[in-house]
Length: 443
Ligand SMILES: C=C(O[C@@H]1C=C(C(=O)O)C=C[C@H]1O)C(=O)O
Image (cartoon, rainbow, N blue to C red):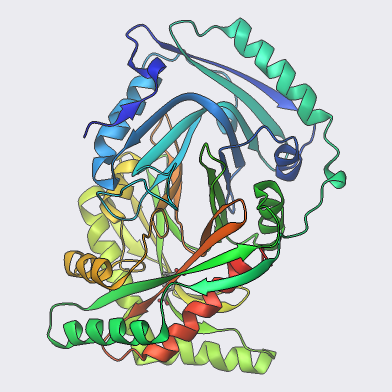
């Protein structure tokens, strides 16, 4: 299927008009509180935070296998845009994500989340350390600077009038939880995966679970993102909202890839132990993480595959020093990987997704095992989410530690890597700990 675009994108003489203004000092939380029904929120260490509202142009496709066509469509939107003297942080950025599996079907609970969906926002905020920029993008045969400036004046007034302190950040509360995987089904799935590994068909597979939760109150994305923003400065804080109000969000610790002027940044994040209750216990768990043969192997499968997957699209692929990434409830092995490239970030996403941190090795056998073992739809869980610009620069996270919420329903997702000597009950416990990073913002 050809990627679809909204009406304005198909018009021959459509053009892109962009206007930018620097706002008085404003935080991401202020922008969210102004509540323009943001459809995309992105906040990552070392980058300006982004909020996108409305669509100047949008592109959808059936799955990650169509990223080349999506890139070409968006390139045609940027093609004849006049040179801008706006600061780099304020330039138009396209925000979106995609489903984990190719051939994704947009059915409940994932209605409103197509196989691939990217939007060039009509109203875009970029919150940098020293300033916030408001950018209005208009695309179409009628696009003109006058109407963009009028939108800008209206939006600017409402953001500057926000009283952030007046909005509650109380979570909705979880009144009931329904795991979609039983303990018996999990043991069976892990046994089947380890049997495939013993038979030599598979090295590693990441199996996930969904946890359905009933909320005590309607889900409110603005207050959830306010809590996530404050609680996870080390993570990629993201949210994407469908037209029916359903929101996919989370604090993911995992970068899939960033491209900045030809420099590629990625990394292997895999192998997990819990955090200790005391400093001594935490250090002991860290020692186990660094020295366990099983955990180091699980990590190295991911590091080796990422290097191999990157090789056709990048040069000078190099690993940095391995370290331990400590999060609220778990700690992981992390190896930074850098490279050089002249490819668009979507080409890098295409080459890397899914890494064996969320899929497995070899990829085809792993994906088949996942489809057979998991009774729920991964949807956008564990798939790339992020942004890119007209230069092909951008950042994508792997959407783990995430949830899909709509009204009083939430679906939480988490997974664990299975290798030859994995123990089903220990992997089960690991997944319950991983649910905590998003559960904490709902209960
Ligand atoms: C799949 C998830 O996490 C991934 C699996 C990990 C593991 O098995 O040790 C660690 C980090 C992530 O790469 C998840 O959190 O849902």
